[in-house]
Amino acid sequence: MKVTSTEVAVLVRDAAREELLPRFSRVERQHKADGSILTEADIAMHRRLEKEFAANWPRIGFLSEEMPHAEQEALLNSGTTIWCLDPLDGTNNFAAGVPLFSVSLALIRDGQSTLGIVYDPTRDECFIAERNRGALLNGAPLHSMPLAIELRQAVALLDYKRLRADVRETIMRHPPFSSQRNLGSCALEWGWMATGRSNICLHGGQQIWDYAAGSLILEEAGGFSCTLHGEPVFTPNLKPRSVVSALDELLFEAWRGWLAEHI
Image (cartoon, rainbow, N blue to C red; front, side, top):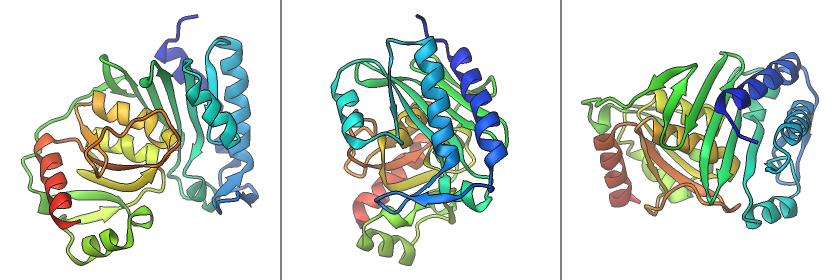
């Protein structure tokens, strides 16, 4: 059965409105083995989309952040086409009542993301990208535009927590940018980068459900990303990946150059 981005986006949007928003800041939290938070909303979104995708696309596998590690590994190693879902990216924000969270969904086929959706239910913003077909925000095309600003004028999205201590200290002592933010939702940050709401980004380690959809959205919007080692961010495995990104090519190269020189 054919997968259309519009149909998938409707399922994601409806599920988020019905499963996430009614529970926003009114759910009990649990803690996973790694210390991260899990809420009823994470599980509700996972189960809702797993059921609906199985009914609509029974031959496509389903990988979610809320599945056991062994099942995730088996799916990624199977070579089959799979959905890759983070049912609630930004759970800490969600549980605290901070309206910065999202749903991230990618379709992985032949070892690459071919469809990416990041949906922000509090703003009703839906970022969509299809490989080689561009990126959209609520139906409007996203295009990169030359910024004509220097690195020292840039606004950065940074996650200090996942950077090495020496890297973190270097950037904090000698920041090459104007100011920095951290939204607390990796997928949402990819979408905001694609719209130009921030200029550069650095993250020390994202999981595949954090970047599978967002990296495609940024790429199809005309943006650029790589790891700290200069490799493509996307890889179909469960090892965390660092992220260096920017929407503007000259700013991207300046940011990469500064990082290479200082860390």
